[in-house]
Image (cartoon, rainbow, N blue to C red; front, side):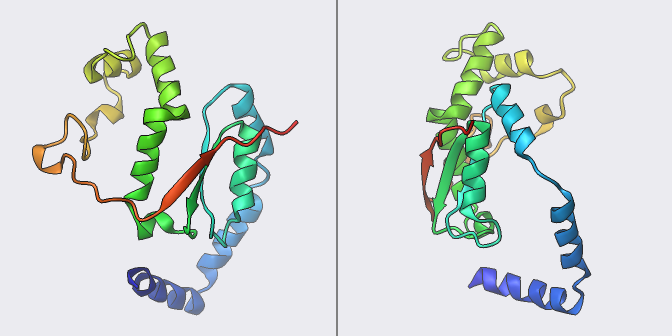
Length: 176
């Protein structure tokens, strides 16, 4: 219902002034193929996760499956989710990323990088990891910690709502 109230004014605006839609369509058509890029990520052993709603009409699920396959990455299918699912439920994406960090390819890549930096992945503090991974003036160091973080203010800790959507993770076999 809330999304419908947000969507209606945008749809009416686009009907009255379709130039915005034309610009988006031209951008999509001009973007060109990304096959080479996805294959290069696989060759360089860069962890890739494609997250896709199974009810996305704008970008079919097959596109996400193909991206994960070509990149040798992981596919997360969000069940019942349309194209704008992160707007409908902002709790699902952080929950997915949290799972990937705890027991998935993202967490494995981070632990590997920490070890390569000469630190113990299980014992290094956040400050030690930041010092090893970030330049002293890195902008990311200025970001405020979010809910659940050891650095978050007490009022923000452990307050996330349960995600509305469920998801499954798979690792499609790479092509070629």
